[in-house]
Length: 343
Image 1 (cartoon, rainbow, N blue to C red):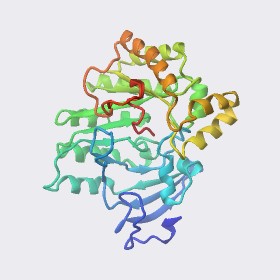
Image 2: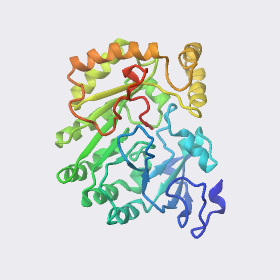
Image 3: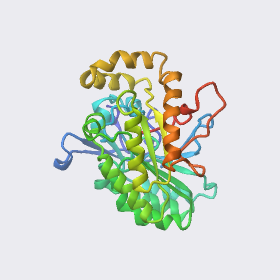
């Protein structure tokens, strides 16, 4: 692993953003309460990561306090990023987590620069800022405080119910700056959820978090992403999911079908072969052309989901900072959010 030779005074030009000189590995930690996991504590050179101008994303900057994620979602788009650290996109991504222990302090310095233009900063667009490690390292309170103090608008997308700890800070920040909060809840069947995203809280627990956010006076959307073909996409399943989302008090719901990037597809297909082998041939046909499900599938999904969003009053009523605006392409509108980074 590259970190083996890293020193605090020696950088690595191939490291992920924020891990180059003078930052580096401080120590690797294993603890009984996180059995099987290793946390690699690093000193970050930077906290803010610039989003390339060619990106479809509606934000210019991101913050990733962690790399790797214990939520262990088999479909996670961020898995290939671990290859940059000479770790694999499978179990290493789930169990070898990089922690930028000084991220809040570095962020505060960056936001204090005269050149900072107070552009939108997004959290949760790569790996989850409220994964289990956050309970140990408590990086998010300092990040929220730094963003609010500098009057920098920000968004938080998460699957982690630990978000509830920081609701008072988020509510206080929202009095001074624009704050968008959303909870990602893809699977509403507990047995399937425990198999396909084994490190995540249950849908019930996440919906309770949505309710708590709304009761604090904050807007909170739900990302019904990704919808898994022939696993979570029946009209009955979608109706049940959106009924529960509505009952939570969510401000809106967004949806997209599963997309399988190179590096993610093999890992997901291994899971499918193990758990639902009868669907292998179906998925091979659906994703024969690459990352996205067939246009026909996405069009059919949109035709079934959109009436349900209207019926439950969960259509988007204002611009949502997490969601890129659809581009004028030949793709059906159901894929407009498909390129959105989700963990």
